[in-house]
Image (cartoon, rainbow, N blue to C red; front, side, top):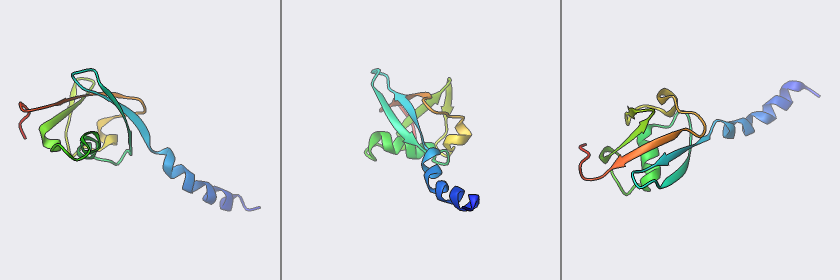
Length: 95
């Protein structure tokens, strides 16, 4: 058996391994677990949280006291599996 063929078969499964979960908590201590891709933008994570019902510009995500910008990727933000992020949203957030 050719080992390269075996590893090629496994590569399809590795695609799913790059996804991981983060924890998003809001001001009411409600938590949501979101599956993310390292190349996904912060804007896309916000869209998942709000199910596309709230403009991502009207919310802010914080990780380790740092505001995450909408155009950053998950990887650029330094997020890892089971990271806890804090979400702020509402009328006082300016776009």
